Amino acid sequence: MNARTVLGALALIVLALLTWELRWVLLVLFGAVVLAVALDVPMSALRRFTPLNRPAALATVLVALLLLGGLLGQQLLPELVDQVRQLGELLPRLLQRLGQLGGDISWWPNLERSLMTGSLLQRLQPLGGQLLGLAGGAASTTVQLLLMVLLAILLALDPRAHQRLVVAITPSFYRSDMQTLLARCRSALGGWLAGMTIAAVTVFLLTWAGLAALRIPLALLSALACGLLTFVPTIGPTAATLLPLSVALLVSPGAVLQVLILRLALQNLEAFVITPLLLSHTVNLLPTVALMAQLCLGVLLGLPGVLLALPLVVVLQVICQQVVVRDVMDRWA
Image 1 (tube, rainbow, N blue to C red):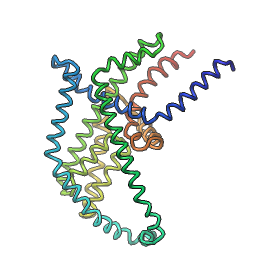
Image 2 (cartoon, helix red, strand yellow):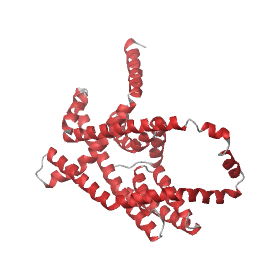
Image 3 (cartoon, rainbow, N blue to C red):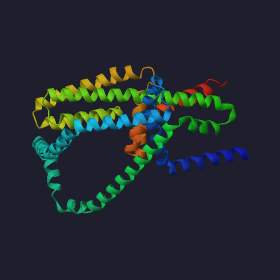
Image 4 (cartoon, helix red, strand yellow):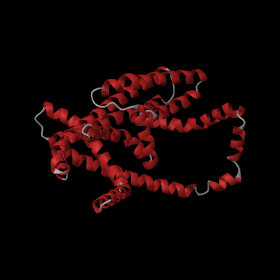
C-alpha cells in the first residue's frame, strides 16, 4: 500500500465525517434544490408559452401560488379550523370508545390503572422541560424552512450559474458528462414532483368526496392528511388511514368497514394506476428501495429524512445509472 492510497483513504474518511457533521446543512440544501425544481416546473411551462424572462416568470409563479393559497385558505381554512376543533372534542369520546372495546383485553385494565399510579405520574413531571425542548426544536425547524425557501428562490432565479459552478469543480474529462447528469437529475426530479403532486391532489379530492358521501365527520381534515401523506409512499397512506378510521369508529362498526374499503380502494388506485401512469416516463422506483430509503433516512435524520427520502432516491437512481452502471460497470473489462 503506497502513500497515495493511504492519503486517499484518509481523505475519504475525513470527507465522510465532515458530511455527517454537516448533515443538517446538506439536508437544507437538498430540500432547497427540491423546492427550486418544483418552482422551475411551472416556470418552464410559463416561459414556453410567454416571452417572460426567468425573474418575471419566477415572480409570476410565486404570486400565483400566493393567490391560489389565499383563495384555498379563504374557502377551506374556516371549515378546516372547525374540524380541528371538533377533533379535539372527539378525542375523549374516541378514548372512551377504545376503552370499551379494550375492556376484554387482559392488559388494558392494567394499563389504565398504571396511567393513574404515582410512579408514572412522577415520570411525567419533566414533561414541562420536554415541551420547552419541543418548542425550541419547532423554532429551529421554522428557521430551517425559511432558509430552505430563500435558497430555493435564489436557485430558481439563476440555476445555470449554479450548474456552471458544479461543472467547474468537476475534472475536465467529465464536464460534458456532468452537464448531461445534471440535466437528467433535474428532469427526473421535476417529473417525480409533478406526478406526485397530481396524485396527491387526486387522492385528496377522491377521499374528501368519498368520506363526505359516507357522512363521516372531519372529512376535509382526513382527506387533507391523506393527500399530503401521499408524498410519503408506503408509510404515508397507511398512517393517514388511521385518522378517518378512528373518526368512523365513533359512528359505527359499519362505518369503519366502509372507510377501510374506501381507503384500500384509493390506495390501490393511487399505487397501481395513478402513480405508475404519471411516472411511467420519468422514474420507476421499486417499492422495496423506496421503503428502505425511508427507514434508513428516518433513523438517521428523523422526519425530515423521511420526507426527503424519495426525492433523494430519484436523484441517486439517475446518478447510479450514469456514473456507476454506464461509466464504471459497463466499461469494466
